[in-house]
Structure formats: structure tokens, C-alpha cells
Image (cartoon, rainbow, N blue to C red; front, side, top):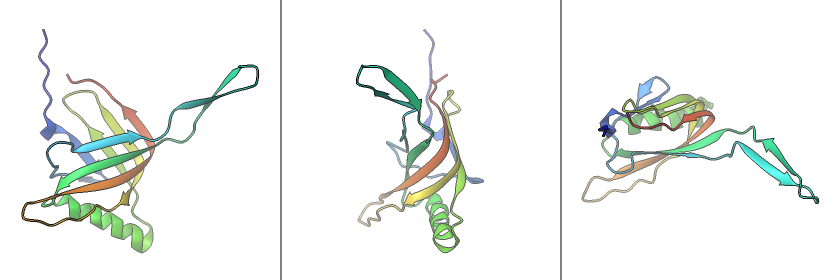
Length: 141
């Protein structure tokens, strides 16, 4: 029987030209495709017409530790967008332990994280909206 290994420390996330680092334990990255590839409708006789949905978006949630320097990077993208509408960037997420690959030619921070302070270090959940998505969900090698 083949032995396969997953190493979360090997997941690479690149926004623009910068690597995202400092992921929280548990769920580091969540990618949710927002659109189906095809829909259909039915006429009064039961004939089904399938039609292509030409919208290809996804929501990415990235959970970072409070101490991650990538919080600064993502905050800068938010400010670039607020000040001069220049907060869009390409995204690539890859699992080198397998064949999964996600990319987008244009993404932006959709929502800044809720900020919480306490006796222990907290996490920051960044909501990213990605368009023109290419998503291949593969297996672990």
C-alpha cells in the first residue's frame, strides 16, 4: 500500500509577488467557488436546456496568526484600493505535496478581518474575492 504525506507547511500562497506566511493552525485556507459552471431551465414540456454560466468567481478565506507579517501586506492592499483603486492582484495557491492548484488573475481583499485582542494571541481571517478563477482539486502524492 502506498504511503502519502500531507505537510501544511509546504502550502504556498502568493498574492501579487509576495508570499503569504504565518498561517494559523487548523483551517489555514478555505476556497469556496461561488458559481456553478452550468445551469439549466426546463420548458412546459419538460425539455431541459443547459446553459453555461460565464461568471467564474471564488471567495478565499485566509486565516493568519496575529503576529504574521502578511497582515501588514494585506492591509497595504486594502489601503491601495481605498486610496487609488489599485488593490487588485493575482493569486496562486499550490500544494506541492499533490496536484491541487488554484489561481486567479485578479483578486482583492473583500473584507478586512475582525480584530480581537485578549490575553492570548488571536487570529485574523482575511476575506478575498477572486475572479477569472482556475481551480484544480487534485490528490496528495
